[in-house]
Length: 100
Image 1 (cartoon, rainbow, N blue to C red):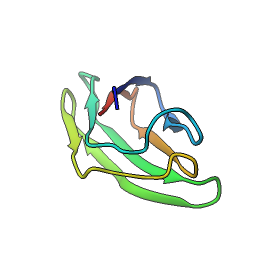
Image 2 (cartoon, rainbow, N blue to C red):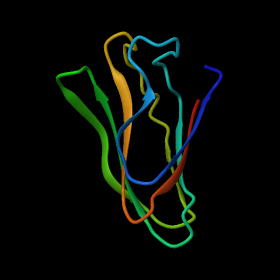
Image 3 (cartoon, rainbow, N blue to C red):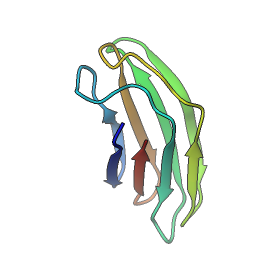
Image 4 (tube, one colour):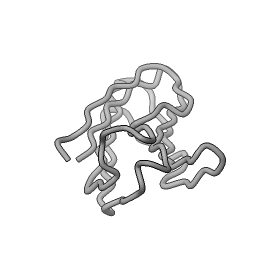
């Protein structure tokens, strides 16, 4: 996988990181989530969704200001069945996500 680089500013409900049926592989070795906001923490949820069911990878994990969270559990999923999504909650969330 070449890598996915995304920025999310403002509260985002269920924003796709990898869309179902897209051309991006569901084999992930690492997800880096950085809270770029210099004032407020952000709560982050990462999940898989098939359109009906949701499978939570992390739920409402707080990332402090100017900090990062690295997930390195080699997530693998069927990209033809699932969307990989992020939800951010907080005051003026501003996160960068890098998927490798």
